[in-house]
Image 1: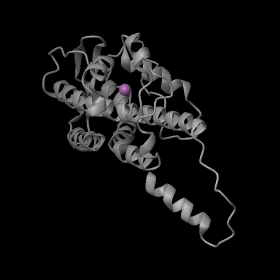
Image 2 (image 1 turned 180 degrees about the vertical axis):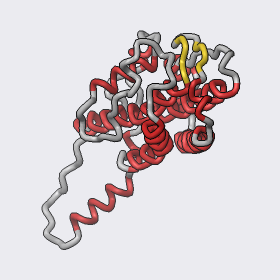
Image 3 (image 1 turned 90 degrees about the horizontal axis):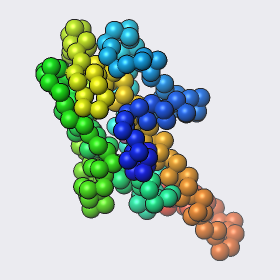
Length: 234
Ligand code: NI
């Protein structure tokens, strides 16, 4: 989601739900999944998923950083700062956003478990992105934050007793959010931004087609060497 769109959107997560719905039926079942909770009129729930459904969602939640790493290995680093249009985030900015979101989410999850009776503040993704100097921050460190915090949260969630999944708290912009609702949204967050990264790559590739070789070579191995160099750039 672009900064411009985010500024016009008072409900960041709901925009993600909309985006997720737009992409139903695309190629990746893992990346494009509708919310099991999206048919609910309000966000206060906790008994909508079966234990199996919740377990599957939790496993997918835990796998997302590995999925992100796999995709990033296929996207050349030289285009990570590329923006298809000025308001849209680059891959570099998306990674920093994911780290900030993960840190915010890490705290929110713990609030839901330990202090569900206490209101929590809004995480304004657009304002964080525009004021925290993402350009100067390390994507390597950000990816490590995402990986470690997600693993910690996953480890916490798999041990939760059943009644805790009914916890809900008051969010400053979302209203009441249950732990189950929170996980449903978080599970789709990284896949949503992976799709955004792929779109950036496709736009970059259209405007930066690979250079044609000076002459055709019939030497054996020439093609595979090009492939190898391409892989090194990823
Ligand atoms: Ni986001």
